[in-house]
Amino acid sequence: MGWLAGLITLFSIVLWVYAFFDALTTPAGEARNLPKILWLIIIVLFTPVGPLLWLFLGRPRSPAPEKHTAPLAQETPIDQLDPADFEKSSGNSRPLGPDDDPEFLRRLNKRINPED
Image 1 (tube, rainbow, N blue to C red):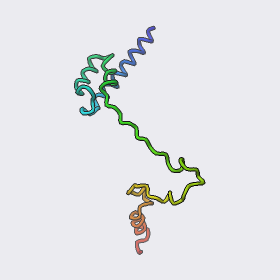
Image 2 (cartoon, rainbow, N blue to C red):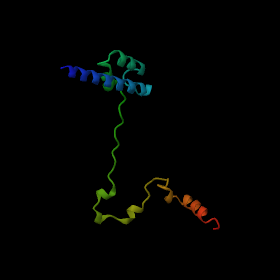
Image 3 (cartoon, rainbow, N blue to C red):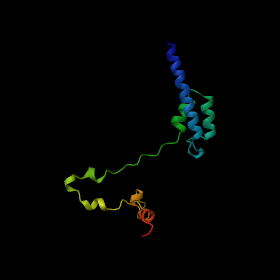
Image 4 (cartoon, rainbow, N blue to C red):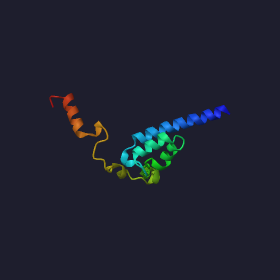
């Protein structure tokens, strides 16, 4: 029975440390329901209940995950793919790597062949 009390105590300490540092690092404007300083006081003074209150009532809500559309290859069977679909711009104005950047290739060519 003593190990159960030790386990509960360990869990309480871990929960307290997590909630305290989470509240401490949360920006003041994002704390819900109460000011941040008041949440820190509640966590410190009401050790078993304060961290739980912070987790459920004071912690900022995480933003809703964005839904990503499935790539074209997963929506369409391979027989019906059009090669022109793969040549379309992805909307990214920056090159993906140095070998896709024409200016980088031009400078590299000048370094390799300075007489050109």
